[in-house]
Amino acid sequence: MGSGSKFVVLATVIIVAFVLQIVLIGADRHETPGTAAVNFSKAYFKLDADMADLLCAEMKEDEEVDVVGDYLFRVAEEARAEGFDTSWKKMVLAHIELETKMVDENTAEVQITCARRRSINPVFGAVAKIFFLGDSHKVEETLTVVKEDEGWKICGQPFSLIES
Image (cartoon, rainbow, N blue to C red):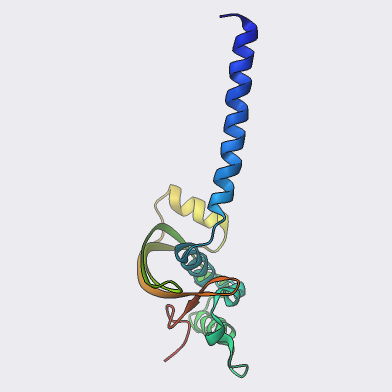
């Protein structure tokens, strides 16, 4: 085999790999009930106020009650009562497993099982992982996910977002 044909084969493989990568990235961007549940769960445990964007309209329709703001306030107060900053309550999720059950075409029940670990900052997480520091807590929750105009949204009683 000449060097010219090796170049053609190598160029063809690179072009096919590039096109395949673009197709796979496009397919990964397709939102599913599972991706909505994972994104919400990550935001919930990181204490990210943007989790409000992932809630269904039914949970945000009462303008007098800010469920996300109330939750973040409760967590901040709990951290202060324990003598810590709010960042002490931030968690990161690992080993995420999902089981999705479609109730109907616009509603799904997503069972999320994962482990959560304290994540004050990225360095803390890396050091804790290397030296096996910190505890890992199991999370098991079933989230109700509904399809609204712009995509899949979380409804119902996710985690302890709404205080009873």
